[in-house]
Figure 1: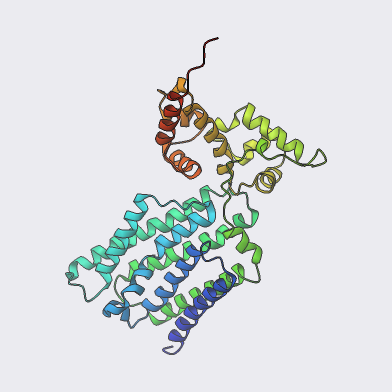
Figure 2 (figure 1 turned 180 degrees about the vertical axis):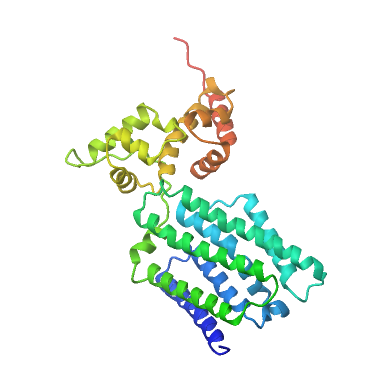
Length: 364
């Protein structure tokens, strides 16, 4: 048992290194940065969870401790990028990550001058925030499942987030039960074996044996801002041409996008086609990876047009956003900044300034 345990840890770290090398050989570091960061955290956990507890007693191991403690936050971040193409990190997430890591350091580093009776408190806070990140990733995976237009990604979300997140939660629950006591040798061996198995499965899934899975997860999201009428089709022989025209009428003329509860299912019913046809149409012909970005493009066009109208310059931006179908001001502000590179207030000020500087028409 004493020999098997370090061998399994070494095998897990070796698999992480192999994944790094393969990704480096293929390129794409920027697009896969979140996956690489999560793999780093897993390798750090394998090193720091050793019964020898060298990471807790050696100051030189601090980078490994930081990486291991950051895993729940990095996992939540990976779920946001992979499942929703959302690279925005709110201030609350940064604050939670700082609290989680700081409390983990105060609870786990033996060389810090922390009273022993405070260490369980810091450990408890660390675990609570970690559970929050893992739970949030699971909730996002569930809530965004219908709007995901990529079939492979909808299936993979339960592997990437469901299985990994559930197992991570189970590990935290065991750590809470054990508190600062060392786990039994058999439990530690089981934990490392399952982590190694998970790394092996993901290596097979994301690399050579399933290249389409990697493409689905890490292909960059298109920031097109295009609507159906903005992409001309070759000719009437295109079987999708009629559907795209009907979709444009529903969205542009009947303003279905103003419904905050609009979904793939309800729009497919209005278009009188199966859901899979609508998903394929929006993904393959209109270039949107998620239903929300497709609908929000219409909403944003309406809001920007109304903000540029001098007759509506006193109408609150929040009111305009809600009337266009946005559920709240936060998602609207983020989506607006992504598309226009400025805040809605800045955009309106520029429009009003441009309107005020227009030359007066000549008489006659």
